[in-house]
Image (cartoon, rainbow, N blue to C red):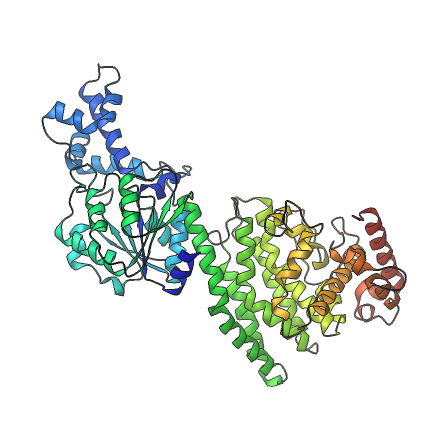
Length: 578
């Protein structure tokens, strides 16, 4: 928590120090692992008839090299011995760091690399120190359109100043394509003076987030961190497994906060998630509240129709542009992360819809409906490999929008709008036989929000809500209505009434997938009995003059509405949990 707060409060002040541990999940060997492998291969070539010579050489690369060649093992010597030409060396090293073919899913940026890249894009991280030879960090940044300024020791004199670069990656031990890498014990003893000066400057002027670095072999780097006397900003040390003695010494010296028992992926994805949450509390409401104030000012003025449309369309466009494989993966254990991000990305739009539909007199009904039409397209965006629950969740922004507009219509006493909201626009699933569905069917929360919602919405003690989708949506949508409906009980009543009416319209369609929007309105305290409660209230309202009928719902047929009501009663009796 302290780390996220400091990174958020002081953007650009914390540098990241990455060791081999961050790349392990990608399948790339550590630098020392590559030395062992190369020495093993040289040993086999040097003495092909001796059994186990490769394993013996890998166990003590420096000793074997000294015994065989009478000289200390150096990385450049090792490469020259393994591959005598520049092209051969490039090909040899590429095999350790690059995918072998298009089907090779390894050697890709990890979740940690991608989370750091997104923190860079947000402006939270501007300097990365790394002991790694690979280019996974560079690739993660390039995937989201950022060209990093990469610095190795021979570039330092001409490098762009740190303050003038969006992100600087300082490769302390070189790049795999360089001959002059630092990879053996002797090579890691001391840095060139220019690199040492740059490193000392970063360590002095920036806070430090250490991850994936054991501190066992990199003696020059350990000495540089030890030599940093002042700590202007705190040091954080992510650790998974046993901490080495040099690392313990550095942690003690600098009173570093140890984040123990977390992988690099967990550390940085959690950090990004927490920084996002802090952003929602600070920056977003300012822009959001300004947009809502503009909308309220424009609504009564017929001359401002274009401005109103632009305001809503721009808010939708921000959501549409944010949805992609990078921010919203369609595979993996990311349900909780994705559903939280969707809500954050939709925040401004939901506030606009709550206020807009409530204050509108029907003039902009086509605009409100276009919101759903555009959000529906997210379900067809960049669909390749996917899990069903994450592909369906692409409709979650549309669910949030339709609930917000439906609740606003109920509070604003313009329920006739629901006849249109829940019947248009039709949508055709991409993985289907082309059968068209109406919003009352395809935006049913139980079809969009999977059972994984219990991971993020539960009463605790191992229990679950009977209607978790309903409970989750009611809690997530309370904030946009704070001004429109300050009273919590009145908001709750409007929420349940909308769910009830949407359920009636869903079962009326007689579509094969039609079912009630099962929600907490089924509970005894809301549904009611005799003449009291929501169900008796709506039953009394159904007549030829019911606003929903007059607006076209149930094909203007009161008997058809009563039939839908009876089906809902039967559904409740069959599925009554109490």
